Length: 321
Image (cartoon, rainbow, N blue to C red; front, side, top):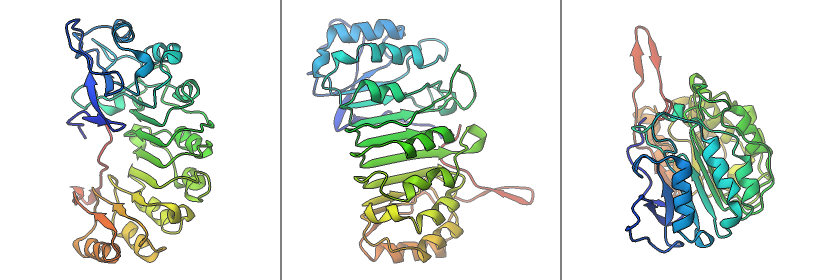
């Protein structure tokens, strides 16, 4: 999948990409999410762009930061750029949201993004409320893959990992973390071909409930195991505390939908997102009727047909490479 557009808003703020023009009129520091993009800034090196940013913008007022393409010629690892951000963490007391690797498919395939251990972000910013990470370096281009260590963080409310292949180690670390304020958890699990080796067993601590007492939205998405995940969710205690659930973007078939239909009531959900699915028309109608009649908004858009190769069918996730 190609990410056609960059987010226009982040953390409820309009995104402003910093240009390297001294005459540029800058918005108020706390009024926008600041986006740093080396390619948009006349192909500057990230360290130069970062210094320009911290010199020109009152960093003590910055509430949200978005790191776009951090390279200016060849793809490179995120770690050196992230180290600059972390070294200046004390200059950002108001920072509440950070998005790492806001990069579209035209700029770099998601599987090529060379990330790093993101645990230091949560350690350096104890008041951070939202962390979004895109990529995973499933091609092994960098010295280290995307990783996370189990952490305790009192303030984090939103955690999103967008990947075509999310490492099982990251999934297990999320599940082992103590995040008492977490309300929104979104995991794009991806496929094994691109490093997505997590299993349903890795999700068990999350599905059991109680791990994240404030959780209201759970997204277990973009998986080639979507039927197995749906079957586990159908009886998972965590569902009772949710307001919305997303099992979208993956290879969900009639088998997974039938498990949801036979499972625990979902009538308390405000929204059930199943978009990008492989359901038959008849089963899709049953899902729509069963859950929609209770007042739940059901998204069954992007109905897909499997690819056929000789005598085999191949179902695909929305985001892989």
